Length: 407
Picture (tube, one colour):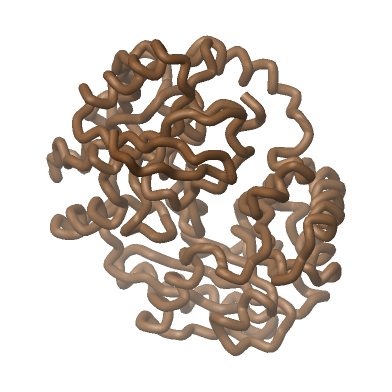
């Protein structure tokens, strides 16, 4: 253990442990158990603000020292890495073999695979390629006894045992400390394009419905309002739909032409070209805007997304962007919002989301606001099951206590 300390979501200071071997990580867990310490696993810190503040202090465990690429059989299109390897390093390694992990991760040079898996990070391409749960085929983690347990394997067709992989993805480090991950891969896309469709307020629902009927197969359908789009393009309409295509050059060119033909007579179509599209993709994947006072995330039925976004835009307190075909809406609070403002807006978001059978979480806000904001929202009907899972994996409440739904 170094002399370094850290504060996690306003709680601390806590001493920081930096294991460089799995055996060292196991020993840290055993010592924590013996001394009654809580453990807070960390990667690059890019999602450290997600969740409730810790219920108590303990030890922070920085897993970036576990940074080995253990196995990369490129012909099998899988890679096995330790939890501390950065997403950027993984992508650089894969690119040499014309492969990739098609998950959009902000700040990839800092984000680690363990942290990204624990937080279940995804982005615009989730529509066409799925989320991390679709790519994690093997996983290892350290339990509360300091023992390493494993699930899945290193081959795509491994179906043995319970699907613990999907259970650990998105668990926010509350069930154990991820030590190793095996991922399946995809080929690099030969071509990538974005088509921009400016949309007036009154046409939003109609235009989104039309995209459900397109003969094309987008990998992303993103919706941004004028507040958000101001830094990405010069559209003057209330909304912009960005439709992304990736694949072979021939297929992408055909789909861009096809969507343009389908849209003829409906409105303007902008095709910025490959170079400009790369900048737009980067803007869509980029970290949250630095000036956002808080960030809300809603998960809804896609059929209710247009009405929901229009209601929130009228309120004017948030810049809006959405993974439109997936039913996910992000709201970026304007600078200067107070905790009271945020609380009022959060209630408004949740009431509106309920009409589309959705839920809203607070994805980011100042630590001191979390005493008055319900980060995860009202308890879900299946909360009892989550508590049961937590009690089986972590009966002593060692791992990230209280951070995920109070568990």
